[in-house]
Amino acid sequence: MNTDPIYIFRKTWGTYQKVISNNLMFHREISAAVRNIFETRPGMLNVIDLGCGDAAHIGKILKPGQVAEYCGCDLSPYALDVARINLEPFGIRVKLLCREMIAVLREAPENHFDVVYSGYALHHLPTEGKQAFFMECRRILRENGSVILVDVMREEGQARPAYLESYNGAVATQWEALTPHERDQVQEHIRNCDFPETPAELQRLAENAGLATCRRLEKRTWHEAWCYQA
Ligand SMILES: C[S@@+](CC[C@H](N)C(=O)[O-])C[C@H]1O[C@@H](n2cnc3c(N)ncnc32)[C@H](O)[C@@H]1O
Image (cartoon, rainbow, N blue to C red; front, side, top):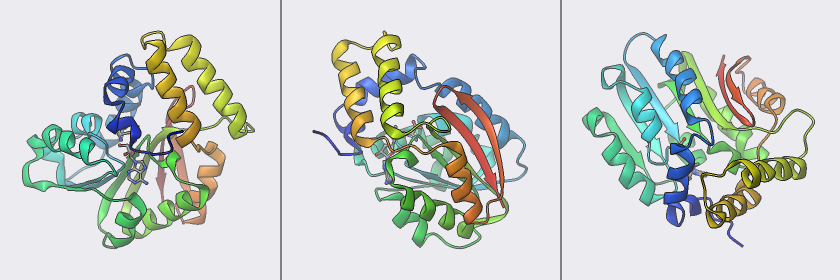
């Protein structure tokens, strides 16, 4: 059984690329919604990206002229090697850390970032880890700063076993772009690494941390984008 959260990059890099290129996790629509938010933010932004992976999407969403500082972190050195290439247009304003996101947040300076972004990574953490995430985000955000969270989320009232059954059922019947072996890899990753919350639970955790203004930016099946602000 594989319980390694970086497995998807270490062993199944090609499969995740196929998931993205066939838009199976709705990266296209979600990126468009997130891009709209960045376009409404004036000035040069300090951005931190938690679980940045290869930074392929954020690298296309952000314009180099918009970014004063970009800090990305990920557990996977393989993903960060690719991120370094994808973020070349941003030059020396990029810092990449091969570290766990809560440790990175705890060491980040107070009142420093305009945007905390996290894409399809927070669901790996237990609920207490997600609470720590929002608490630390609140501490490191500047006034008017935002948390932009892209992630899988359970439907309201849906328990984790029902989520696993329905998501893996959709993988089995709708992710025809993948081979049966690739679908097995994805289903194994979901069973072992997906601990998604409902949007209401995430909102409660954000409110506990003083991020009381919560707004959904996009929802496609279990794939959602939210913005949280003080
Ligand atoms: C599905 S990928 C998403 C990558 C990218 N953000 C995107 O949207 O395409 C999830 C990433 O989260 C990273 N990850 C998982 N748990 C993490 C943690 N606790 N701290 C830092 N990175 C983590 C994994 O290594 C992986 O690269």
